[in-house]
Length: 113
Image (tube, rainbow, N blue to C red; front, side, top):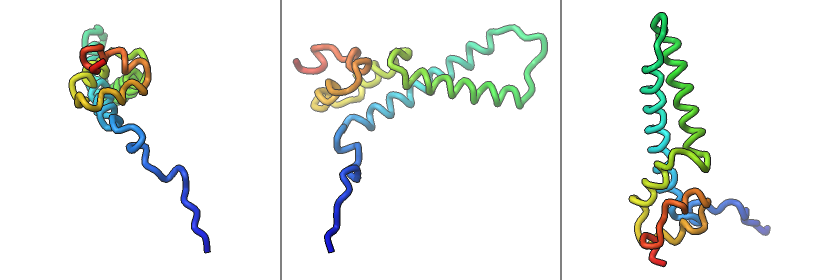
């Protein structure tokens, strides 16, 4: 009996060791953006206060918008700044193979080029 290994069975983390850092940075940008959107919503004048159901809906909407913004290449740029701070110096070369938007935050001094 011959057992074939699955080529896709290798976890993605072995291919990209900075993936956990990218996930953390994206989550932090999502949280920041969600909070910013909620605070911006408070500045809009209303004739009557929102119901608790509407407040909940708006909070979900803000969070979904924040996730979309954090995953986009343009975003607010918070993800790039956080990555620059949390990725260990010896792992910054892995960011060269990452998306161009992530690399933009990395300067020559920071990547040891």
